[in-house]
Image (cartoon, rainbow, N blue to C red; front, side, top):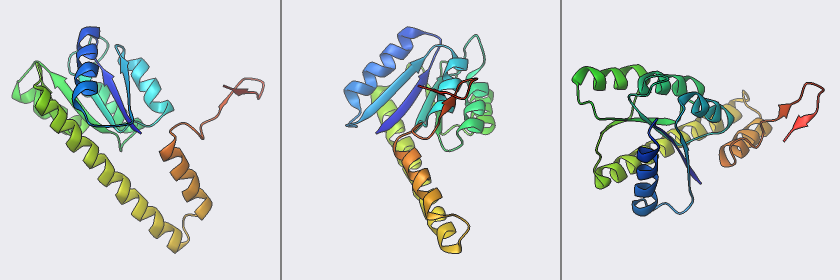
Length: 175
């Protein structure tokens, strides 16, 4: 399953993005979540793994660069892209450098460009996943990672949030 998180303070933009992705992306098992509040999106990103996060640059609560920088801290392997009507060189440079943004998408976007950038982002995410798997296998061979720990990592990767348990104040599990 591919998981994409979209964040923009304008619901119309989010709806247009979702519509464009559903109509033009050739991904069978695509899960898209949308948020108008970047703080809610950060909370969600801490709960489960996303392959790709696309954020607006200008939002009232925080800038897209600040938001994507926070995403980088919470989920460093999640690929980050930013949307903006601004084409100022400093804005683009800041986004790319500060939050390690994979792509800058201008508003209004072209559907073909959006589709291609998402395809490239997901390919990059796959390459990061493969690198981690190879590194994990090496750690198992060296004895610095147990097979059980590796199995738990893979389970979490396949079903994000599966291994995260929320505990209540009295020690009960919260569903």
